[in-house]
Structures are given as C-alpha cells and as structure tokens.
Length: 297
Image (cartoon, rainbow, N blue to C red; front, side, top):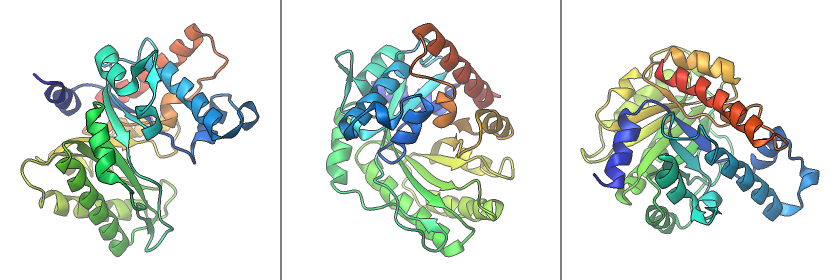
C-alpha cells in the first residue's frame, strides 16, 4: 500500500482527530501570547515565526502526538518549508509520528459582503500545490467565513470553495472545504441549513474520482451534517472549535458522532513556553485525550 493509500485509509476510517497547527500571520501573536510568548519577547516577523515554529515542533515531538489519537495535522505554509531536527516537517510527521500532513493554502479573506467573507485570490496556486505534493502533503485546507443566513452569500462562498477544491483535487491532493459559520451569528442555525443544502448540490456535481473533506463549525442542530458524512464524495467531516472552550467544543462534538474534531486553540489550551518537557507533554496529552474521546464518542 502506498503512503497516499495508507494515509487515505487512516483519514477515512481511523479513530482520532485532525490537529490544526496552521495559525498564520494575523493569528500568530495571539497564539503565542496564549503560550506565554509576548510581543516584547521577539523582534519582527522572523523571530515571531521562529517562536511559533518552536512551539509547533514541541507539539509534534510530544509523546502523545502520534497516530494513536491524532490522524492528521494541518500546517502553515512556512511550517511545510521548515525542518525539525533536520527533517522536513511533513516527512517527519508521517514517517516518525504516523500523522498525515495537510497544508493551509488560503491567503486571507475579502471584506464582508452578503453576510460572508470570500477567499482572497491565491497567487501561484498551481505551483504551491505542486510543491506541497512534492513535499509529502496529503491535502489542503481553505477557510472562508459565513456571518449571516444570506442565501446569495452562502451560495457564492460554497461555489468558490468547490471551484478551489477541484483545482486541489486535479493536483492530486485532497481538499478540506471550510466555510466556517461564526458562533456569534444571530442566524447561525438558519445559515447552517442553507449551507448543507448548497454543499450537497455541489457534491452531487463532482466527478466520481474526486473526494473532499468538509470542515464546519459544530452545528446548532445536532446531526444536520450527517448527510454530508454519508455522501460518497466525502472522505470525512471535521469540526472546528470556532471559539468555544475545549470543554464546550468537546461536549457539542459528542452530539455529532459523524464528525471528528479539527481543533486549534483547544488543542493548545493551557500550554506554556516555560513548562518543563514533562509538564508540557502531560498538559498536551490531557488535551489530546479530551479531543480524541469527543471524536470517537
């Protein structure tokens, strides 16, 4: 079985969750601050991203960060191009940890219009996908945002996501489609109802050889996304924590047994740069256990 076939089997049927280690420029300072690294501790983007890489490397090398509970992990583009102990990150993740590597490819969001924020253009997309494939990346992730139950806006955001997904699939990678519905939206449940209908419409139009994953906010109405998980073109439906606490996100996830977690902040909750390796591994292991348990419940 090739690596890609083994990775597909692991993602499609494995017990566990997808770790999100893909904080980019805008969210990096906040993520570092939660980790105990303040802006005064680094000077400029180079030092900031190095501090973030050091944190990610510590997570990836931790005792419990293995395929026993972590099926895959989403990386930032800069992380894909880095090494850990001299080994390219994606290669190390799969060969040493058994964790399938994904890549965040979106370049930020357009201003809100029709209740949504579309993806900004991705310059050099074809070259980026080719590079990702050459470095052992299995799939990609691309996030856009829904703020309100606007039918035209949601239709546009889903159409854009699937157009990009087709380009990703053509390059031999598996796209994670991520139209996030904000948890503070007053029309969240209505937006999710429109969203699932639009996604099904586009799934039904995919070629039989194309498989996608879908990453969605944990829904207001439990089970609404089961129809996506059961669709033959969907490899897996994963859940983002969306700002919920780890406890709330895990509780809500258990009510949606056909979704597994793909958490970011919840995974790193309570971790601190000043922890000893034992303390760090223990705290991370506890977070992994919580998220794993909610994902397999």
